Length: 254
Image (tube, rainbow, N blue to C red; front, side):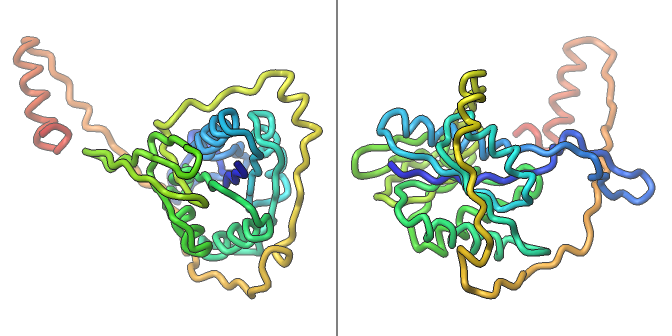
């Protein structure tokens, strides 16, 4: 199996603070990491490799310092990485074309794994965009994947129900966070990862198109979240009843 995993370097959203006067997120000094669900995607790729053999390539569109984050994925079990520095103000359109172009340059692949969405923007667009550009089948929101000799069988999470779908190769699969628990690399794996290559391909190496962003981000603001802070101090049975009624009113319970 030749497997490609798309990974994105993002800011650690748990560390972001919001300026109380401007309502803008403070991003300076916030640590960066690989988006959580991209690690789930890699873990699923590693499971496929362990069963069927093959090679795992990490694809990242990002700044040069993303190589440091990519080393963690190599330590987990990927075989090599490819980093593509994006042009200024790259949007989903530009990044999807860069990733798809890199996949065409790689040439041979059976499965492309992506997280269902990145934890910073959570648009869920990248996987479907890439599948459309490559003109290959896609299975989104996969919470279980079984790879057989000539096909992939996946269980899609649709909220209140799940759907079983199968596809031939090549196929793009986006995975949910519930699909697995990403492994922690051992010390030996971390040391061994230093010999695994990370290639840097300029945008001009993966596409000859003049990529122009279709979207422009005008502003980013934090949304204040306020708790109701309702405290029930009466009889336990009465308090439970009131709590259930209140949750039903706001739509938490049906």
